[in-house]
Length: 255
Image 1 (cartoon, rainbow, N blue to C red):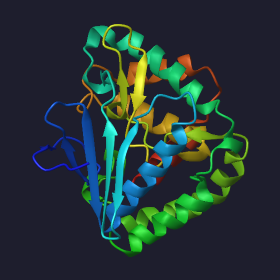
Image 2: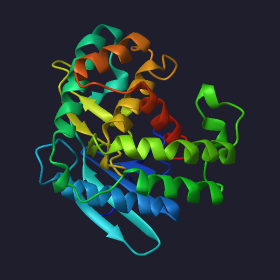
Image 3: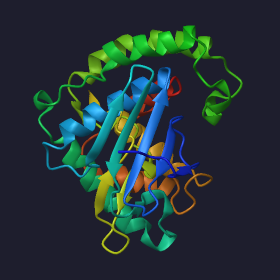
């Protein structure tokens, strides 16, 4: 499937080149270099998701010549959760909580992708060694700190987090920020999830940490805020650990 003449999409932060078909029915994501692996990972996960009842994009075409990988998918219905008006916040929070419960209830033994700490912490170290961590994009609480300093903190906290994750391993989205979930603008039901290249088995606190951080940021998501983040945790309905929420926000600084 050729993408010549397709419009380039400049929103989003995946780092890949994203194009939209003239009729809006399909998107193509292309990646070179280290971004190529992200596109490969997303393709593999979408193929796996096609065998589940979770809403995700249908793969229409796939090409990988060893230098550039291009994934073409059918456009999902709905609007990003981040674009809903403030009047929809309460309904959106409940819908998001229900969807996370649904995702996390998929039998983890059915998922072939691993994102637990034995996988992600070594990846974080590699990204620091290769100067791939964006130190300008750290959360406010870690502003002006270096990637090497944060890596030292991560390694110090890792043993406790690895011991705790064993009781809460589930299938996680891996980057559960509001723009990555589409909803029906009338019912607010989740109609699909995007940017799934980090999907895999991990501690449920990974998704809860990033979802609540995303909701809490009124700069990025003005319709929400800290109260919405607290409501999400309450609606999710499973006991959570504040220490682990902070740990997984720290871990995310490396990706």
